[in-house]
Structure formats: structure tokens, C-alpha cells
Image (cartoon, rainbow, N blue to C red):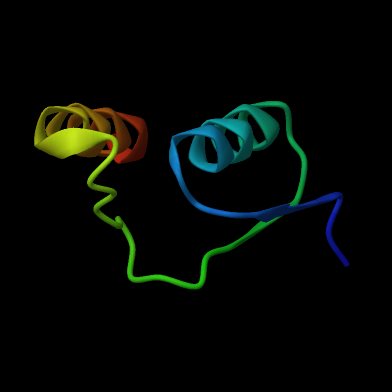
Length: 60
């Protein structure tokens, strides 16, 4: 059982998951696409920034 289920692993979903995890909630993130996904509307620059942010979140 999870405290929070997030549907969508884009920037908002990932941010919500990170915040929930930092607050001690058991969280499940569901994403239908490969992760991280590329969205042409967001552009390559935002994808690079997003990947750097995810990497910094996963570092101990």
C-alpha cells in the first residue's frame, strides 16, 4: 500500500515524488513512456536541465 500514487513522470510528477519521498511518504510513480521521456514542447535544453536535476536528487 502506498501513501501517494503519482500518474505521470514528467517534471511535475517527478518533483511531487521527490517532495513526497523527502517527507517520508511511500510513493509510487507511474509513467507509460520510457523514462526520462523527451517532449518536443519542452525542448532539448529543458531535458538536459531535468536530467541534471534528477541526477542531483539521486546522489547521496
